[in-house]
Length: 376
Image 1 (cartoon, helix red, strand yellow):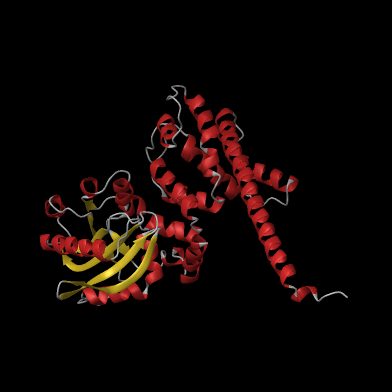
Image 2 (cartoon, rainbow, N blue to C red):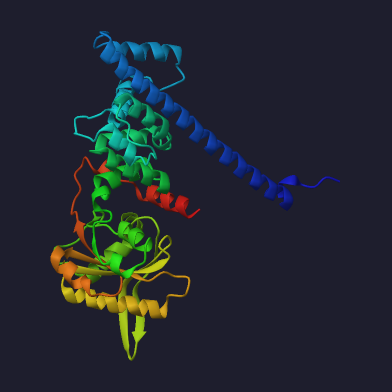
């Protein structure tokens, strides 16, 4: 007597595993196709530049090439004249010895790509070296991401920063564009901090790169006379956006966390746990200019968290002090004799966004999908 297979537990479990295998195979195939296509684009970009410099085929060259390729390969959508221009621009961005933005020589670009080879004096040899070593990096992200990066980044170092972060964090194109337009490259690792003195290496370096300056809260609309509690409430209300701006690894634990020391009660503005640093992170919000006493109070909070929450598996607790404004020298002086790791950063509020920027920002659903994917 046969059983009803659709309600059979063993069948359901086997089918679920099979579906996972199929999805994994589909993903691997998509990644492989993307890599092969972008490798073709790279070689095509090199050929286009070579032919345009060596021949006199004229201004209609790309238009004719697009027509001929599209006729021969109608199933491939990447041979429009516009896309051929993007391909040429993409190759030139990374492989030219210099460009309109005054980018660094190719030999230095190769060095930035962590190529473990001596600098090659011959320009063409260096371009060949980049083709062999750099292409596997830039072909790991989709074509649309590549176009956004070369359109919005001013130099190779900045471009590589966003490529590596896209690969590491799986950013969608809208999230990538938002990060570029908010200036993440310039802001990451630029806070005033005492990490080198209070944390062991490489924890100190990782902590430094984790904190930005300034933080951009362009998702908030605050009244002119808002206070710390208003700012705290608004950030928690827009927690998904806030976590995106904080960066990968921050897990929200709560606001106004009560800590008892002696006979008194104290309340932490915001408390996080950083899954990569493996430590608690105390965030204190100040709507005014940085004052030296703020560092002393945050130092006290960090020590309390270390005593109350930290166990032997956790690294030392870190504090982030977010101020509307700071004098960098005053902040450096204030942190010089502080024994707990603290970073001081400014934050910026944008009351309204330009219309041309709004379409570039990710929707709440897109950001939530990004976080869901990262947690899996």
